Length: 247
Image (cartoon, rainbow, N blue to C red; front, side, top):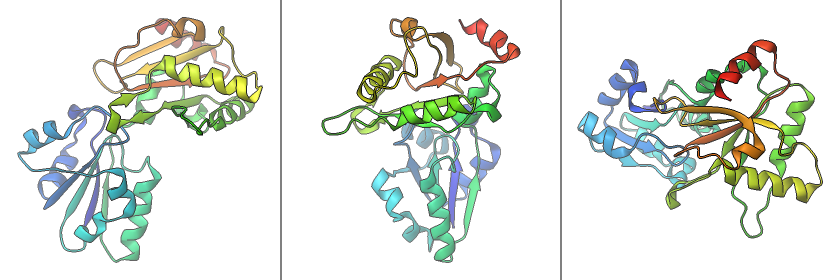
């Protein structure tokens, strides 16, 4: 059997069901390249078990299924298991190869952003703001923000992670990429006066939510990762009243 087990956003999110499934698994893998907040050492100490690291190539190649044919294997995933399409693909491969599969859901960024007071049903398509590199300067995230604004929907912008380099995009880095992309495309979606929401370390006791202009965000210290930006659509009175406490 292959078990896809969500760990949530911090150790305290571990559910009874998740703990039961982990301790009854013969082999444990931790996939942590897409997030931050729970490390392998913490989990090994808590469960008194060896946990193997699963990098992107290992997970996306489906090699873990070779182990799941003969053993109960658990893939531990920060947040919720089915937020990433890679894990949905693993479930399809399990069905194709006659391997039993189980999913244990948990807290994710999509739960935690409701702490902003914004209604989850008003969010449009999510996008990611990546680091620009030589010969890689995408701007598609601007299209997503623009399209969401067109249907009066909020836009959640995830910020790039390069875990192998211990590199986590800061809000100021994301704003710089957004401005460069806007200049490159000639779009005029936002300016220094545009209000955004900066969410940091969501789902933890140290979480931070700030509602401020892009100009003010450029000079604000938001602390350690992970960070997200939200471009809100037109705010209802209750949403605006809620957000003022974070101004």
